[in-house]
Image (cartoon, rainbow over all chains, first blue to last red; front, side, top):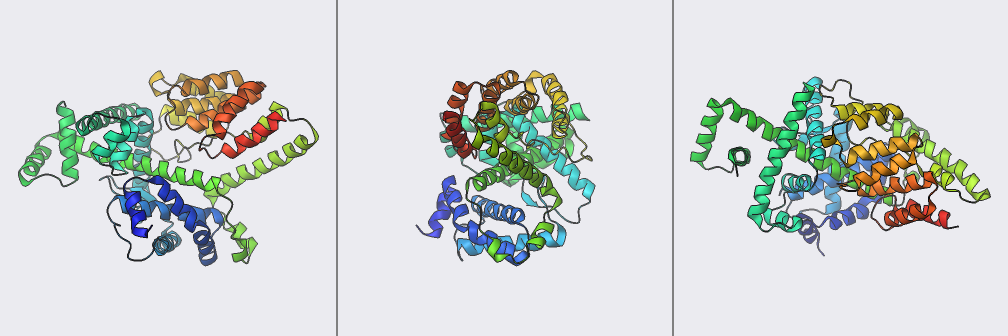
Length: 186
Length: 260
């Protein structure tokens, strides 16, 4: 199977493929990071996990459709960037409020960053309260970028319209839980 | 779809730049004139960001679980100075290392005991039990502007005041008591050596386990060990052994020890 086939399979939701990639480059990547940046093994593992996740997100967001280099070089390049950023800014990752994921802006005041992080954590907790199948449905749609057809199939809905309606109902419920908890804590 | 659901759908398309010129103009006019509509846009953005944040954390956890299942990376030969490595342990990992060190001590002591004595359920329990880490809220962030009752209970749990944590988890409104709450409640009962109540909490959560099914079964098995109920613990650890949970290997070890 070519590396472009691997990407295509990950794109269609084959999570085992990502696990295979994780195992394949793990030893080499972690040893290289430790050797090159003198970090400890836990940090090296964290960077590797981050690199795998960014690799995955770039595939599902359509930023990576075909490999111009190898998957290994791609992962190593992400790892290198992350290590350099960490050294420079002690970078942390966050999500922008417009729904996109990005690095925290180092120029952003710490208080704002903490407030933003607290809000995201609150939504995360609300997601937990929301329970299944809503939680899974929303994650499949907004994070894993699954199509409504795939979601309907995975969750056993009659058709895409049912899945779509269910998604809006789940959003409405999440909004309600979030509002209740925001009101209770203000 | 009711009006609110329709508005959410419309705003999502607005965020995704999926509206035609005419529809976009209508949305922008409404945003300029209707405060509630503007507020809804902000909320939808926050919620989408939060959903992605939650999913990303879940995925990171899955990678960490996968990592735990794999053999340790052989990296030492590439590092010249072990002392340097020791110094590089960042603050955020200290707790992990302390817990790991504590587990090694517990396991070492238990191993000596287990080699010389028949494996009693209580001893096996002691060797394997570690409270489930707080993966639900960042209670260490004192500046957080929002702290819910659940987060307060988790803070107490993190501080190791398990009897108070039990009280606080039990006082949460029924609607908030999901599988996560019962998982931490059960853990607190295990520390307080009340296995029957712990098992009851895990079994309640297993009615609707969400993403915690494996963890709940693992701790339920430990609960039965603490209670000395070998038959039930074999039944539960067999489930864990056959699952894809990171503790399946430990479950296999326990089953071996119990069956001796």
